[in-house]
Length: 289
Ligand code: GUN
Image (cartoon, rainbow, N blue to C red):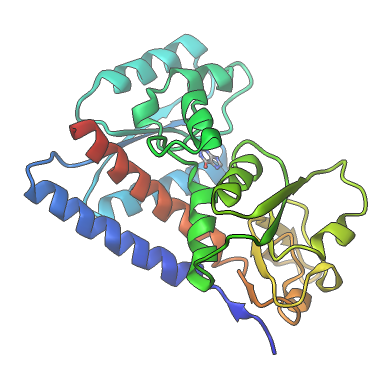
């Protein structure tokens, strides 16, 4: 029997509706309209597309979106000054500096400068530490938190399951592993130096793949009945001259083996921005108290 397809579009729409309802309730209780500042440096085409989408969706749930576009050549001090100004601005509840940044800017310095209580990406070291130690007062990176919602849409109790995260990035893989650990899973992380990857993936009840290597995971490498989450999204050229978005998992093979699986596109991607909106509402609520 083919796997259940986890519909990220529908789950993201439901989360956006929850956020919109939460914003209304927050305003009714006398809170000020949550504001998300998005800072875009330079003219990376993919970043422009992401930022436009973030702005549109922020406004659609009733929050304010404040966009700052800066030229590619700006110096680090100028960006730091903007971040500090946003930190002090009471109308701003969330700050997101879109990555990648130009080479002359030290991304770590920028992340360090964002006020932890407004760090809706969850990249500031204080929030990284809070997630790692299981503290409830941190802000959690959007993609891994969105993935937890996708997994829980098909299985709520994850205690005792074996989880493998393929990819050890700070943005997805590492925080993902920490969240799965908190959910009671026995967690491993595989990365580009891992040997015999298929042997390990075949043992995983939950497999989260976030490598950006299209087609890395074949159907034969998947445990029958497992939950497979594909975070990868790469645009590849077809022989017809057209392009297509593909994941790290060979979907047509994996769907015949897994118990539940996310498609690409339409799986993890939509959930990430919806989770950003949820994080912004969380930040606004905490800043009020
Ligand atoms: N660039 C690609 N993904 C992300 C993300 O999740 N947050 C930020 N700030 N930049 C990104």
